[in-house]
Length: 180
Ligand SMILES: [Mg+2]
Ligand SMILES: [Zn+2]
Image (tube, rainbow, N blue to C red):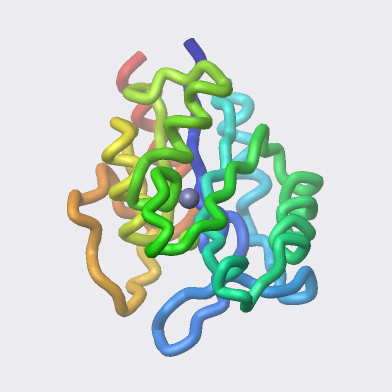
């Protein structure tokens, strides 16, 4: 079976827009800043044989502060700039009680089913508690890029706490070397 690295989008692949200590997604393509180092980091994961699947909550569409087209315009740039294999999106909000909004693992489980992924040998990289708890619920090894946002901690501690996507990939590849 194949192995994957599941990647959150905002704050992992592109810079978060931080207001009042809390991160928000870019609203427009003009606001989009791809994280320096994301491209070489993802290229290293591809070379190591991982399938790269983006799993992202985009509740602002339902809240009316972002459009479906806006989210997809940003995703198209990410898709054409970075070597990602798939982008899976939850457009729901808390009240919808869906199975795909992180911290629930639905997006990860869907991605695993679609791509034939062995979850226990796969990784999740995120920047918020929702990502880590979703990754843990799916049975993945988790890495938190810790921006020290003013918000709650994950229910479950991440497997690794790192400062950047490059550092996250260093950790993953080091762990791979040790286990081979
Ligand atoms: Mg994020
Ligand atoms: Zn959902």
